[in-house]
Length: 73
Image 1 (cartoon, one colour):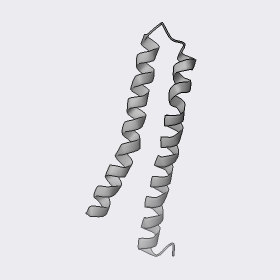
Image 2 (cartoon, one colour):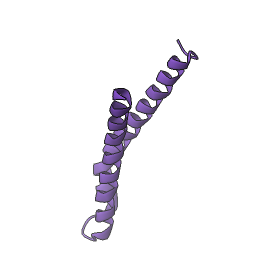
Image 3 (cartoon, rainbow, N blue to C red):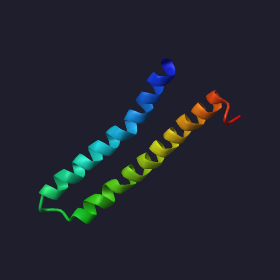
């Protein structure tokens, strides 16, 4: 139960960061005073870092599942 609680927390964090970054990009689309490319450049690193973080977490969960079932040692 503690494992699932930790996993769900770890998976939620990057998803929340994706969501908030996308909201910021959406808001910038509505504003006509800034070039979208400029705004995207500001936030793209956050999206890239958290995509990699999410992939790493998912790969870890898959590996743990394989270890528990004896597929991976």
